[in-house]
Amino acid sequence: MNETHPSIERIVDYLHGEVSPAEDAAIYAHFATCPECEGKRAEEVAITDALRAYARATEREMPPGLATRIRTTAVDRQPTAWQRVLLGFRPAMLVPVAAVAALAIYVGYDSWHRTAIATPIKAADYVNNHAAMAASAPFGDAAPPLTLTSDDATP
Amino acid sequence: MRRLSTPVVAVLVAASLGFATAKENRDPLLFAAIVAPANVSYAGVVQVVHIGSRASEADVYRVEHRAPDLTRRDYEAPAALAGDTVVSKGDLTFSLDSPRHRIVEGRNDAVGDSRVLGSEYALLSENYRVVRRGDDTVAGRHTVDLALINKYSGRMTMLVRVDAASKVALDRQEFGPSGALVSETRFEQIRYPAQLTEADFSLPKNFAVVRDPTLAETPEQPDAVVTSAGFAAHAPRELPEGFAPVEGDFVELHGVRMLHLLYSDGIRTFSLFESSRASTLEAATTQLQSMRIGDHSGEYAEDNATGVLSWSDGSVQYTLVGEVGLVDLAHLAESITR
Image (cartoon, rainbow over the protein chains, first blue to last red):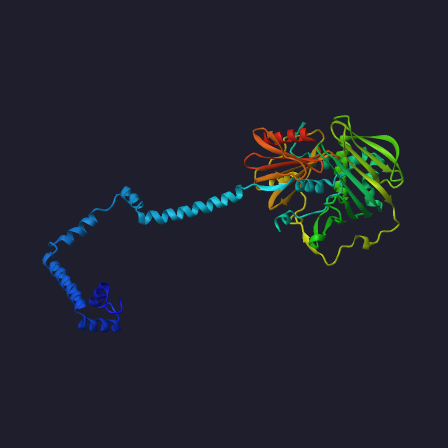
């Protein structure tokens, strides 16, 4: 609402009782002193009355027995197995199923990817392990100092 | 290459030949040299050289050994090992990791267990003939030289210079299939102190002790390890002449658990590593060489003059390691993959 005149939206809200009590009182007081806004209020009231009158004039009674026939038809027409399958492809079903599938594929791929990644191993690590075990041979070399290969991963 | 007629030749060698048979075939001086560390204490400086087809490497360490099974090695070279210390006590080995202020505890496979020594010596006696090659001098000590001649190739595989008095092997030279020298372990200095105290083998008390994750797993017969691998592991169908499976266990490299089988002919050895997880080979000092293993592609590298050949058949990753030469490694690889 600007300082002097309420907007047309606020006038509509006022007519539907959707403004605060303080604003309601202020708008009501304003209508008493502002013919321009009072005119807009009267137009809105007239439009609302016209719409209600038209709705009442065009209102039709539901034919007798229609609701019963609809219910009966719905019960008789159970979907076939194929129709049930197709029902699964409704967006309401398909979207969450696709989301779950995508998550499963991601997790599965990630798991597979981790195992499929080849771990780099230094030739020296093989040689040191070979030398350590071969030290038992009658003239085997002394085993080299033992290191933990997991240390290579720590900074 | 010899086709294996029985699944476990190690059992055949260790059980049917055994220590008793080895005793009958033993060369007294060679056997005395093999068991000398169990009887003789010594201190000195050792130089180890490995000569590869692409690069050579050398280690130098000071050693103090108190019979029967206390050994301390302080590395002086190469730079990567300088300052490192390894202390072996019985069947355990302690590697001092000074930068991390800790001690890595592992299994000492070099311990002179009489059962292992017996089967290993039996294997050596089966495959090698001992020939005296005169006298020499090493580190100022008078030595008797023994040539170990491979019974299948007729070639000298190792020359051992044995201290005539103490029977300690002061120099060992190993030769490849072509006759070229491939490695040498030689005492540059040696003395036989009357006493080495326990303090010489003490470990720093303010270091944390970290256990090798596979320490609890005791070495087993190779067949038992293959059966319990948890995946379709394969042993080679054919082995180079005189070789037999001697030991197996599980190791963990960079989080990858692997089956590890060791094969030996008494002097030369090679290892087969198998894993159900894929891995790639990285070489620090040499370039990787691509190879074909049957229908599969593999990679070959050398480290410390030792060949490493790795490939996958799609379900198992195989890696062969040894000084037996690229030709034999490739034949072994094909016999596994077939």
